[in-house]
Length: 119
Image (tube, rainbow, N blue to C red):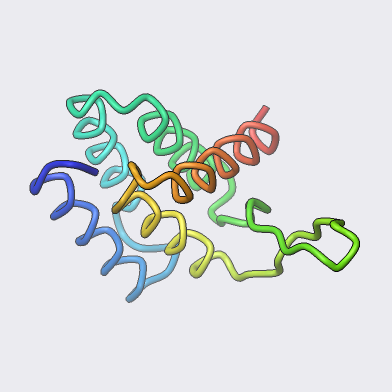
């Protein structure tokens, strides 16, 4: 997120998730509001991943998205087992610096995983 207002909204959402997990009150509405800020920033990747995130949360009441992987010595990738709260917090923290190249790649991984889970 590039603007101060968007980052304030994102920080508030992160704090809420830290306290209450994925069952945080009004989480979906907060993510929809944050998406509006991303629209103003004209960042299509962030807009898309926020929409997919709140749709997934609304549909599943959980955030069991496999988007983080570790690699073994032979180059095989395996999904990392992570609880819903930490998984969502990880994604939200990536969004804080969505312009960073590595963060952007991981956000794309979330987008792909969310699309596969939802559709």
